Amino acid sequence: MDERDRAIVNALQGGFPLCERPYRAAAASLGMSEEELIARLGALLESGVLTRFGPMFQAERMGGAFLLAALRVPEPDYERVAACVNAAPEVAHNYRREHEFNMWFVLAAQDGARIDAAIARIEAQTGLALYAFPKLKEYFVGMKLDA
Amino acid sequence: MPELDPVDRALVLETQAGLPLAPQPYHALAARLGIAPEEVMHRLQRMLDEGIIRRIGAVPNHYALGYTANGMSVWDVDDIEVDALGARVGALAFVTHCYRRTRHPPEWPYNLFAMLHGRSREQVEEGVGRIAALLGAACRAHEVLYSRRILKKTGLRITA
Image (cartoon, rainbow over all chains, first blue to last red):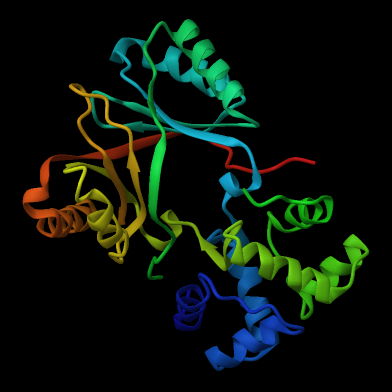
């Protein structure tokens, strides 16, 4: 990644224009040609610096229900419980974290009833109490990472 | 909740993996969907206005940019002050997500969650210190939960 790539990543984490030639418009503000911007974006995607270039959707607004949940998993049992939780199709991401609450995952389903069913199933299969952390308010979600 | 009609859903499906890397990406989408390019732009603008689309642009991979330390900081903040303070915490440059969530006392007294990404734990700790200073006496306790391993990551996507 060189300086021009860095400029692209820093400048284009949002605000990509909705117009006939958006790459040309964005390229102009970066002082490069449309061809160069498209080629560099392709290379940044190819090398994995960017996971995606396009709209970032707020999944909750498209319908469906989401829930952050955690388990306090006894260490000797960790792999078994991780396999159980990961097997649930409702589990979108699952992270191991350093804490007594050591497994954190997001459940996603069409509606709240399906989330409740997934909770009951995970509790039955793991033998652990699931802690639900519904979102009461969102203050910010975004990316402001400097390349 | 804003409704997605079938054309919106088709547009989401066509773009959730990314925009075409072609000089006229909205025209390319329009051709695939059988609608006018103006309608593609109009619908994307409407979804931006409604918050269905947070933004359009580059989605970086944290790890590839060197942001390898990821800490979920959690704070027990006075209920009266949490909304005003949460908005200020969310505005800090190093905070990528910030939410108010349910407490589970006594094991879990925390109601404010702020995700921090840094190039090192020291950088994350520095951010935690700045949040602590901002919250001041309104915060009774806090912890940082570092991620140790991604167990699963499929992402949130709609399917046809």
